[in-house]
Length: 151
Image (cartoon, rainbow, N blue to C red; front, side, top):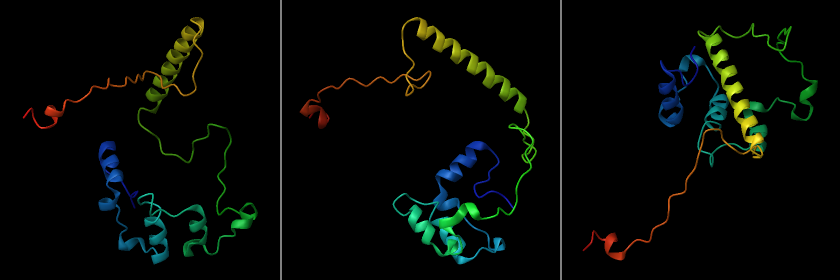
């Protein structure tokens, strides 16, 4: 099958995610139980309707989960990992090497910027977004006549 928000382009995937109320459908051939569908739709929903962690733990779909002793459960499958960067279980991504090279160049540029700022005596702010500048618009008083189109 396909992932629930699959689309032909990344932008269309984003549109499907944003409009989940209209686009999220579970096909009958998926053969999911009512309980399973309910938990899916109660996690992918508006925040006020979303299940809390405690509600999720009590949901019928998870009734057989030993929440008090999860670490004792044996996983159904354990991947074999030989190195920290072992990716054998992931699909190959076209142009992945180009993206990695670009990422390395970006990091080098960022390090250069941080070093330059430090040399100027500017401390690095962990809440700072690189390349983002916010300028608050100046407040202006509205004339009463302007509210009604100058009449």
